[in-house]
Image 1 (tube, rainbow, N blue to C red):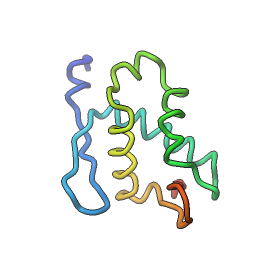
Image 2: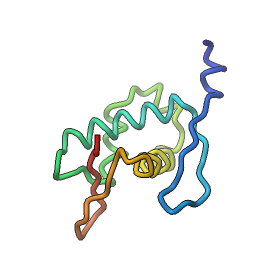
Image 3: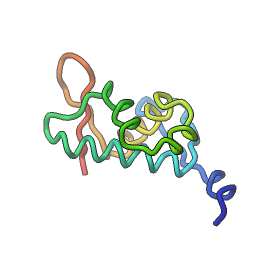
Length: 104
């Protein structure tokens, strides 16, 4: 499989509210999902702050991947919402900033 073929493969990301979803290249989805899962699993029942995820992505992903990724916050939000719909993540019911926990 060449890079051009890989880049055209997309994953449809849904939203919990049932609004219009978006298509994201499979490699972008996988890279972001892996970082989210690693961070939420490491955080355990305390969860990870959603606001910390952009920094974690920048720390975990290679510079070349970050450069190809484009808008980190936009892609991060789309993948996070899709993971919520799929039951892989849940928001912790706490006051204050949004925290996420892995359900896997």
